[in-house]
Every structure is written in C-alpha cells, then in structure tokens.
Length: 443
Ligand code: MTE
Ligand code: MO
Image 1 (cartoon, rainbow, N blue to C red):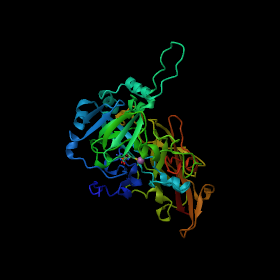
Image 2: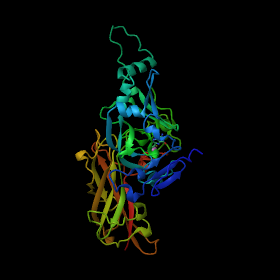
Image 3: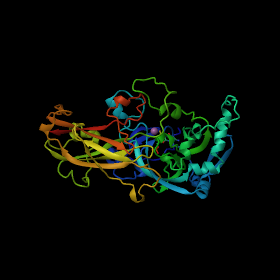
Image 4: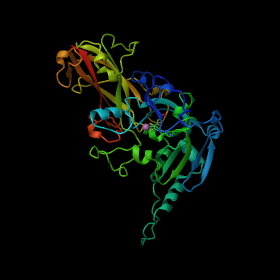
C-alpha cells in the first residue's frame, strides 16, 4: 500500500478523496490570510506522496537535467542551493478543476473531482530559477534551436545563394518535468526562459521547507500557469522537441468547445498553460454589523450553505451585507476590477481590492498572486425582489431569495463568461463563469 506513508493532514481540509489525497481549504477560511497557511493549502495528488529522507534537504535528493542532444547533468539539492541565486515570489496555484462543481450544477455532467471554490491557494515560494539551471547545464538557445533543426526535413533547395532558412524558434521546444511517483507535465521552453517569467525550482514554501504534500524536497513553480505544470517531487527535467507524453499533458488538462460533448478531439485541443481570469465569493455576512470593516468573530456559514434554509439569519428588509472573496488572473495579469451584484446581475457595483502588491508584499516580476476583495452594500428589500430572485416556500416559511454575483476583469480587460454552459467541456476545466451564491431570507 503506497499510501501508508502519506503525511498527516490538517483536519480542517475538506477532503474529496483520501487515497490519493485531494482536499481544499474550508470556504470560510480560504481567504482569511493573503498567504494561505501551508497546512491549509489545497492538495491535489494523483498518486501517493513519495517518501524522501530528511537528508534530501541537502545531498540525498538530486534532479537530472537532460538537454536536447541527450547530454545529462545531475544537481543535488545542496548544489542548487549553494550555486544559484535564491529567488522568492508570491504566487497562487490553481487547479484547472477549481469550481468544477459549479459547472456540473449549472451546465451538465463533468468528469473529475468536484471541487468547490477552494482548488486555489496563495503562497510565497523560494527557489532557484529554472533558466539559470538550464544555462548552467549547458543549454544555449541557439544549440537548442539547432537540435530541432536537425530533426526537421531540410528546406527545399532554392536557386539564389541566399542565407540558410532561419532556425526554428525556441517555441518548438518544451521543458518536461517528471515527479518521483511518475506524474509528469511540460511547459514551452520559451516560458522557462522568459526573464520575467519567474519559473522556479522551489524548495521553500511560506518560509519553511516544502511540506511533503506540496512536493518536498523540490517542485517546479510555474506562476500564472495551470498548477498541473508545477510538478511536485521533481526528479527529472528534460528539454525536448515535444510536450511531455503524460496523460496530464496530452489529455486531462485541456479545454474543448461546448459542442464537443463526451468525446472531444483530445489531440487537436491545446494543453492549458496560462490561466484565464476568475473570482469567487468566499464569505457572506448579513445583518447589523455586516458593514463593519472586520468580519464578525464567529464566521458565517460558507456560501454553499447561504442558500440552504438553515443557513439564513436575516429578515428580508433592506439590510447590510458584506461579501468577500478572491480574484485571480493567469499570465501575471493583475486584477483591474471586481464587480459585485446583489440582485442576480441586474445592477452592479465595485468591490474594494484588499490586496495591493506595493511594498514588497508580492515579490515577483508580474502579478502572480491572488487579489482578495471585499464589498459592503444593502440587500434589496423583499418587496423589491422580483426578477432574478426566487421565492422558496419549501422550508415551511416564505423566503425571499436573491443571487449574489461576482465577476472580475484583469488588466488586459479579459472578463469571465456569464454562464458555465458557454464554456462547458466534459473535463470541467476552467469553470470560470460568474460566481453566484443564492441567499435566502425570511420574509
Ligand atoms: N506533481 C506531481 N508529482 N504529482 C501530482 O499529482 N498534481 C498537479 C501538480 N503537480 C501533481 C503534481 C496538479 S493537477 C495540481 S493542481 C498541483 O500539483 C497541486 O499542487 P498542490 O497539491 O501543492 O496544491
Ligand atoms: Mo490540478
């Protein structure tokens, strides 16, 4: 049983499967801190957690780097730490399946773990730059380009004594990562070499060595990209002329047209790399005191329960309400604006952005972190609730219900789709539609 050696986990995590471990932070704790405590950071394991001895912090763990010509170079962790400059970045990781359960509920069946809003977390990562290590291992972009040129048929002869055809771009090469337990994925070499891309071989998380669940002793961190590329328990890095052949590169983490149904054309679809913009509501407070700057000491029920008969507390008059949550855009794009609606999308207002990366709070070349947001307003009174609201008589009493909505816009003016149906794919990937929470009150 390869799972017997899996680490102890925080009891607060909401477990989807325990073997392998897949769990997300409870919604009411998800955005309590800018840096998700490592013990609450979501866990997405496809297999068991490899056992690596304590000495791995030094010389007992090594990563092998293989260049396109087949040359290899081995680096112990101790050597990586000693020979390369250390970098720190704050970056969110988000699974492509985050909010998949919303897509299932609002569109139709999806295959995969039915994550809530918590397959995302934010941490400070410490490590060395992949680009520095590749250069040290002997990778020269020109060599790399020549290596692929050899693999391609020669250009047709032409009559002028012109220059040779230009070498193929570095974009035709990929960096393949392999983990100790056989997971693998890849990124384009261009991503790895982007001087502002901050791709790390990370050994630290939130100021401590990586916890075992998060890749001890070494993982890739590819900020702004789907977390599936941030391979944990990293043992091999290969620069090659094709993507990783793993199912996680060639199959699972792709998106499809909403028409493609249960048997999409896997080979035609592009592997997910940079993430689109998304946001979610993680807390709702209703009633007196809800407009205070600080949330009440007793946390409210998580949003999933805000719509259940027992999860309601207010009366359906005009009442203060406070919402909070996160917004995140991939590719290092910053969050420009967060729009909130208290009436199902009829009218909108802007949330305050809680996190601001000024003052060295989010080290890194681009906006890799999430942005938490907060909004206080007045719920529409019951008599004003007509469209986009529902009356729920199931619970014995009459309830006036409204739908709280959030959507974010990034600094390239990318916005979230209104519906999950419009981005439906059988894998339930990139479920980034407007996040809706139904809120019912006694009337
Ligand atoms: N790396 C290895 N070796 N094995 C895995 O199962 N899961 C990937 C990625 N790297 C995985 C992996 C996926 S799909 C995600 S979402 C992230 O790790 C999750 O990282 P976390 O568990 O640190 O949150
Ligand atoms: Mo994932």
